[in-house]
Image 1 (cartoon, rainbow, N blue to C red):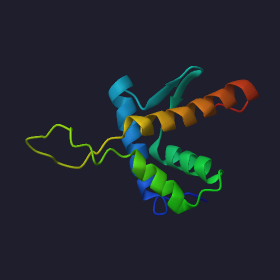
Image 2: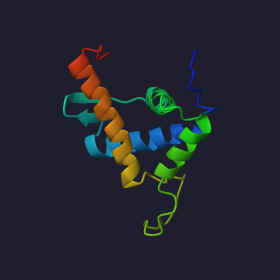
Image 3: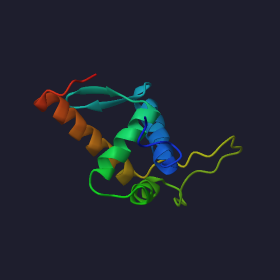
Image 4: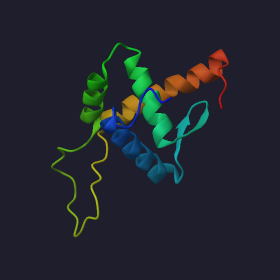
Length: 119
């Protein structure tokens, strides 16, 4: 049973999609490169992981969604305009990317130093 379903965390899912698009644009694969090694990314797993990580700090689902909404780069007036668009791609703010990277670095450190199974 998924304790963090997409319908309860739609903005978190969108942020995860944007983060994975960002990582693919950097590495041509859905991976995050930590100091300990690559972490392969999947939207659903990343969404559940981030939601559970922030919920562990006693945040409500609405608090998590509000935090994730702040990561989206939807108010950037300096974005380039396009001739045509076949969909919306707001991207993430740089501080939002850093938050997710910090959480993934924390995961990688725990796996490396405390012997959690990597997969």
